[in-house]
Length: 462
Image (cartoon, rainbow, N blue to C red; front, side):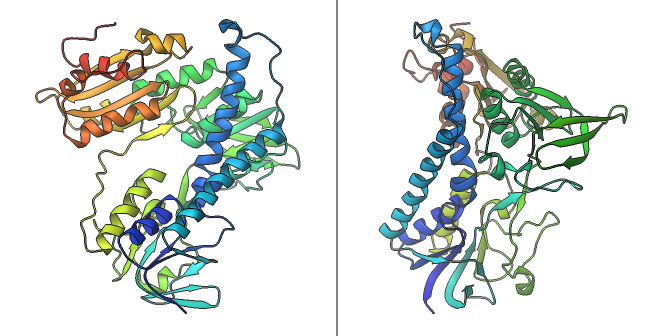
């Protein structure tokens, strides 16, 4: 039995960041992880492997559609699926081993096994019980399904199975038009799979800016993805090699079926807290199965904290990381803070989609007077040179004060471009502040400046 200042349960982005920050602040720290590798869902079966496949499949798309236009001529590359999966696995390995190195560097003990909390101040891992002055629950989330759908990770898969299919399917049905479904649907579409997306709502990417939703759907359709919106999936009948999806259209309750080689169930995620023993501790939970915390990430049980996907808020790796940092600061007696109004969201398709702050729909609903500055990538020289001129930047600012309230980008490197707007919002900047900041030419980021100019007298290049 060992004694620690802090034990973190879970080594995903929230957990490992919390552990490292605790160690940096001089706290004796351990992290519990039952997987064979550190990094949680994100590094092992989520963000990182999906980005590897998105990158590889985008290179194929470029070779097939744009290389010849640039004078790069030759036979289009063929896809060696086993090698592509091996590349993906190597990327995972490099990242997970990197976390191991950081643990050793910061003298963090990895307690290998699945953890539970038998009582306050105790964490059990296997047969051993360890003492901890503070415990951080960072157990993340797992894929959720729909009633009547049985996941086998072979024919009916979650994102986990979709990242390691034995072969590229001829046809895939994706249930759910959110981030995960569209990213993985995009991967397989580029690799030659016929991809059909079924979504319960009447728009894709629920909660995003309406103008972005419409533009994004058109671009994905242009790339070959098909959409059936306003459809409620009733069942999925699967054999060893095929599946049949039955759904009803909400507008007229008519029933339809769709055949597929693989069905990807991408209907969101739910908190994963099984086996922790939270009930026995009396820890308060929400109706959605989330651990309830206060604004300092404390549960109702003294000495037990929670962060990331298992508490309220967007299920995003970077949100968990920020909470991990802030929670560590609180435990160390310092001030921890997360600005939940400035957490960006990104979809890593091509073009990428990124957002931060409020949407036009939210501002209208709140009765907030605002102005919108918009600039198309068609007016950006770098984007045109790189066959990446689809999309736009939209900045929303307060009508009276010009303070930036939100931004929405669909276009090249949107996930990177969004961050200058995040920084501006953290400093309470106006659209004019952004517009008066010199941006290097030629860069994609000039489109951000032009959108800021559009909040005033107007852009220069449109």
